[in-house]
Image (cartoon, rainbow, N blue to C red; front, side):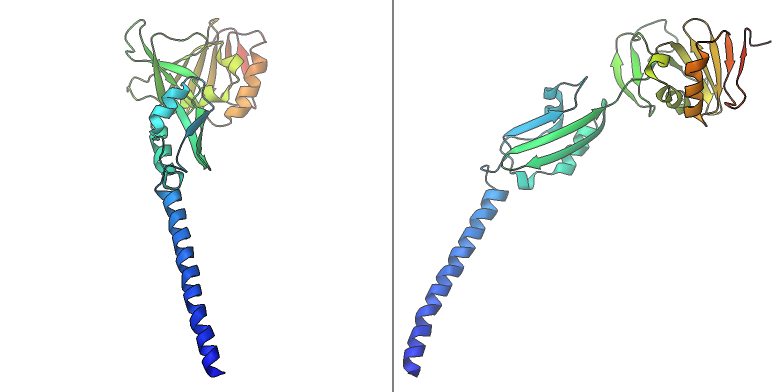
Length: 238
């Protein structure tokens, strides 16, 4: 009886080894398919959220090669390349098996502009977003955006962009310029000749709500530096 059991066990071992070898082979095949083969490689790059940039520009900046195995695609590197593109404010990159990548971008929105040559009467300008990032050059000052005046020091203040980003688009369109030598001294100039002393950047949300109402009231000069004590005058000196 002992001999029969030994013979049976001896016949089972080769079967187990065969199963193990088959499992290893399948695992190796899966690793090859996932990490090295183009079978599960990139075939489609979907781009969502573009307004100024074209889909082709985003794909080119992403630098994703067709056929790159999805498992080995460095999503962080792709995001880094796209983040270096001026008009892109934020980006997320995701993969979806068997063969697609989706790029979702949020573009920067211009809230003002700065002339490339402040001394020139016209010419190309830099579009600036609410983060005070100059992200795009255009041939001329766009209509409906205020000029962000550069202080005498030559260093652009972030306060002008911050205030412009707080204002509703309908109000921004009425502005001709924003002067901000510092974060404590912001002044808005309207296209109709009126001006608004904004003061510091604190409580900007409250000031923005008040300004929308004040612009419908008589007066040439508004003082919003203290939103709890707003004043309106026909002349700054009165």
